[in-house]
Image 1 (cartoon, one colour):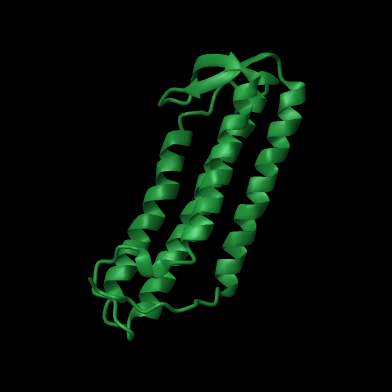
Image 2 (tube, one colour):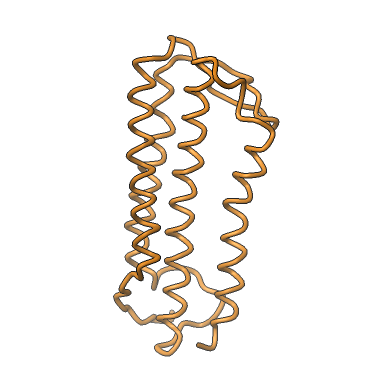
Length: 167
């Protein structure tokens, strides 16, 4: 088995901004969940179909599911990002290309972590707005937006990983 270089990456200003944005979104997610819990009726929307329309209702305690999952994902990816040498790569990692490959991979995970929290934030926000009568569903735009927010960064960073394989 190949032993990969273990290097400590210094986050760039952009990386720090993405981390901060993710943390702020996670805090906001918990805030709207807590506020929502005390302001929504006992029965709330718990599931949406592909068109963004409510197709299932349940207890308001289900409001805590998305923030809990977001928190677990956020902490898990944060911990995982400290060990880029264990990730799978498209090329053989050498001392020469380790920093560039690790940097791209960890940045992709930071952005995906932030995107997951953003998507959960939007779902929770719209659930709250629906219970207040200010919205009727997520809207037809939500699923394409959520998919784009995941697929576009992954595609971009995969292209970047392939193009930096010699760097």
